[in-house]
Image (cartoon, rainbow, N blue to C red; front, side, top):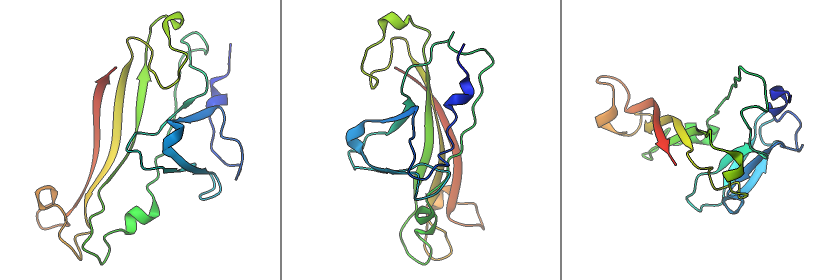
Length: 163
C-alpha cells in the first residue's frame, strides 16, 4: 500500500522538483517558481484563457491508499492583486480556487492523455472570490457592496460540475 503523505509537497525547496505534481495544459504555463515565494508554488499563465490544472503525475486509484484520505490546501492571493485598486480607480476582481475531480470508473477505460478526464468523472469547483475595489478611493461594484461599508466583497463560491 502506498503512503498518501508522499503526495504532500510544501514546495519548501527553492528551485526544487515539484513532483509528483504536474500542471496542464503545459502550453498555458509560462513560468513556475518555488523561489518567488518560498513554501509556495507561483504559476504565471501564458494567457491562453484556459484553467491551469495541477494533478498528481499518475492517477490515484481507490485501492492505492488506505482510507481515510484527507488533504489540506492553502490558496494565497497574489500580493499585487491585493494592492490593485488602492488609490486607483481600477477594480481588483479575481478568483482563486480548485477543482476536485473523482471517478469510480474502471481504470482500463481511462485515456492515456492526462488532460482528458476518465469516463463518469464528477468534479466540484471551489473559488475564493474578490469583487470590487478597495472602496476607499474608487467605486467598486455597488450591487455587491455592504451598505455603509466598502465597495468590495469577498465570497466563497462552489458548484458541482460533471464531465
